Image 1 (spheres, rainbow, N blue to C red):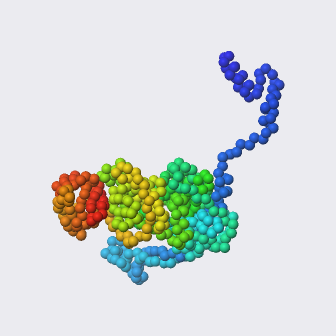
Image 2 (cartoon, helix red, strand yellow):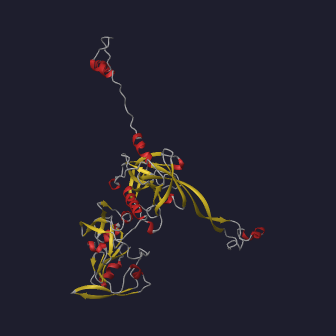
Image 3 (cartoon, rainbow, N blue to C red):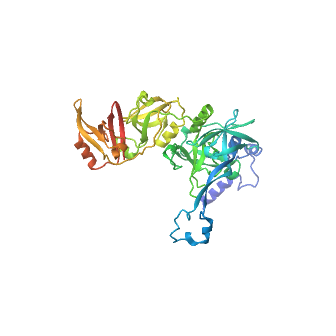
Length: 478
């Protein structure tokens, strides 16, 4: 009981109440504190938002688009009087009874967002899909001003477009951050005009980096290297800003993943470094000029890494290097694995294509390579593409159609391709008459019997290291 009274007395003493006297104890310290007005600030992003909002604009688009419409009526109107097209009729699948598809040109109006990159020149970046088929573009600022804009350039592969305002004044541009320094868990803020609600602000974190395969389009379009964020992004946010807690642009909001079209916390933005590289080309050339290194590359998968005895599972595998190319002059060899561009790590082919595709012809870049377990760096210059790219299948099975023979070169037993049927899997794989097979999955092959033994139990990934003339290259078969 005494302990309880002691504790209670101590609490009262802390509160400034005495059990012995009703007269308050005066303290000079307490008197001074009572004269000071204490104001406790509530954490807020308002100052940051006020700084960034003038740089984020609304993009209003008008245009004409071609749409497909379907007519459910038969081609010949009077047939409607007869039951020829009813279900179960022998004529129900005839051209006369099937819905007829037509194309029509219709006017449309659309709304998106944009970000001011250059206040002096009036440059605004937005998504390419925002101004697609546009005949008129207007940009609305947060203070109510409206300016006409002209389209400087559009780039479908990066989904970026550059606008320039007409007869503008007193603009505020945003500062670009280095998106290569982003980490999963960093705070992010999305600003735009979802559903026409101007200057809407949402917040979240960076949920992932180097996201690809979002659009599910053709291989040529696979230049995706998105930032993933859970900051809510909705229709109309496209082209808007994704910023960090310094008010710097880290990305351009461009897409969401949603089964039903609404936000579920999975949004994607184009990294600011790609935005910077792409728009710099648009300003200089009026277009994006993508070049070549003279490499044939593929994703480094776990099965390929195992087959090639590579001790990492992510990167870009160099299957061949073209003669007289920039890559050959830089010393890149088939079998190398690209692991970084300009000291920015690369985990796979899509982010490599996206980063590489944002550099202009003539740019000098540094590639980090893994060769025989050792890390090296090379400087290489992006050159103009000297050949027209062809779409070729990536994966084939079997070596059917190729005939081999045992040969000896400088005392070494090797395997030679005598002939290849042009309609065979081996030809599609890339084998050609006269090729010398040096190794299979990094295992030296001396003769046909050894090759046969290796293929008795087909490996998950087949990597043929061949010599073709003076060129050494890899042919990959999954």
